[in-house]
Length: 109
Image (cartoon, rainbow, N blue to C red):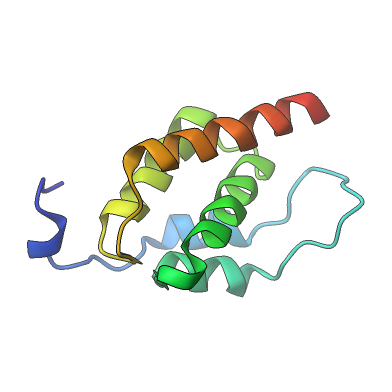
């Protein structure tokens, strides 16, 4: 991974990630989940007016899919730094949002 994401061509999403995000969750939540196409759209890129909502949605989706929280944390930071979030959010905002959603998810379990 380059430390200059603005100068590096954005790679296509790996098939394993699309498959993972598309599979049904093991959770039996009482809310209506968004279609997987919405998360693929978020991964493909968001602009300034939708960054925070997309961030929270993506974090919640990854954690609800029982992806290890350390992996989810890295994926969200990579997504933010990949050039798909315009302009990128501060790493501190990403970390704080991730911790808030993680704590909320842990309280549910």
